[in-house]
Image (cartoon, rainbow, N blue to C red; front, top):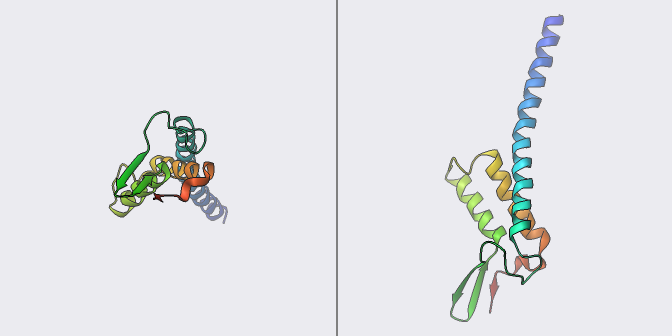
Length: 116
């Protein structure tokens, strides 16, 4: 009887450890992505970024602004859709999620993608 209880507890402990470990890597990557975006992005809307220039595509009278959260989202979706192994790991997924969170939570113009 005690062996069965011990066995169930060990299995439960193993599963909890595996879940915690997986989420820990995503959380660690998320913090890293958020801090990376915070350090290298402009402090407020309209400020030039410190590291990468914003990608703005001009088509006739329109400007398409690809924010860092948007290309992080596209990279994440493509990586998951096509099972690109370098993207489908916990730290990279967390990093991209952190970048997405930073872009959406830090700027009010996050939803302005197309301007005339």
